[in-house]
Length: 155
Image (cartoon, rainbow, N blue to C red; front, side):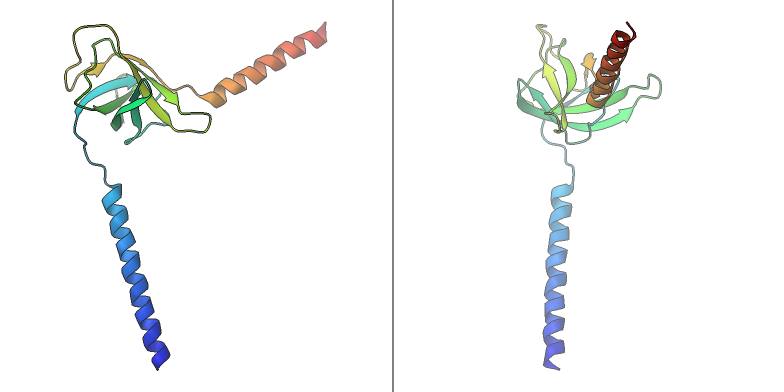
């Protein structure tokens, strides 16, 4: 009888600890809008991007990706960026999606231009470059090298 009581108490403790972990996961997993202003950018390919991805300038994080959706008219990915209030972006700022190393995640790198007019909150970054598919580039290199090698054998 005493063994059943101990097992019941231990089961209750395990359930309480599990409920605490679930609560912590929900609290830390919610996406909130940090302080800052939002701008949009359209990319032809936004692979590897999603809410929470970093936005960097000169290697320093200045914001995050807030949302991503497809424009049904142009079929481009419209990415909404949340930029820190302390950073003002010139109108001719460019954005490109870069991989953070060979196996790393992607981030958006912003390069400020020289325009004296700034992008207003809710504005748009017009100069963009989408992500580069490294696997596709590697495949093209291998097939082009094989084609060049095959031409030499024919001579």
